[in-house]
Length: 314
Image (cartoon, rainbow, N blue to C red; front, side, top):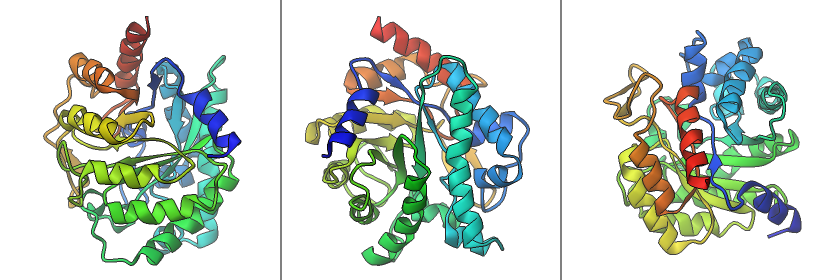
C-alpha cells in the first residue's frame, strides 16, 4: 500500500464509526426529480446537476461523513446506447465529482469526503444483472469496461473510489486488475449479496472479500444494496477473513423488479426508510466501521444512523 493510500485510510477510518450517505435516487425522488430511464441518477446529473448537489447536501446536513457521487450508472457504452456520446459520458463522470464537492461546500464546517461511485457492469443492462452477475463476459472485457471510466473518475480527483454493488467474484477480479492502474487512489469494494453468506452470483462472501482485499489500494471491504436482514451474518463472515474496515450500506429490503423499476417488499421502518435501531447497533457490534444506506433510504434515515453512531461513540 502506498503512503498516499495509507494516509487516506487513517484519515477516513479512525476510532469512531463513519456515517455514509443514503440512496441518492431516493433523495432525488424526494426532491421531485424523475430518475426513470436507462441513465437513472445520471439522467438528473445531465439535466439538473444542481438537484444532485441539493440531494447530497441533504445527506451531509444529516450527518454523512462520506457522500457517493452520481456516477454509478455512467459509462461510455451506456451513454452511447442512450443516444449520447462517449465524450458526454466522460463529462458526466467529471460533473458527478464536482456536484458532490459542491454539496460538501454547501454545508458550513463539513469535512465530508467524496467517494466516486463505480457501479457494476450489470447496471448498464437494465435487467437486474447487478443482483445476479454471471454476465458471460471474459475477464478482459470486464477490465476494458471498467478501465476507461476509472481513468476518468480518478482524474476528477475524488477522495476515494466507492466500487460498489459488485455481484460476482469474477467482476471483482477484473476490478482488482484495473485498480492496480491507480495505486495511490484509495478505494473500497463492496458486494451485493443473495443471503447472509453468498454474493449474488453464488460465491462465498469470504472468497469475494479475499479477492477484494488483494488489491493494495483497497482500504475497506463491505456490502451494499443488500437486504438489511443479511448484513450481520455477512459482516461476521467478512471479519473472519479480513482485518480491513468493513463498510455496510444496505437497501431498504425487498426485491428489485427490473420490469417496473421498483423495489417490492421493503423491511425498514417509517417513511424515511430507516433501519430498526437494533439492526444498526448489531452491525456496529459485529464489526462494521461505516454504516449508511442504499436504495430506499433518504436523509431522514441517515440522520437516525448518525444519532445512533454518536451514541455508540459516546
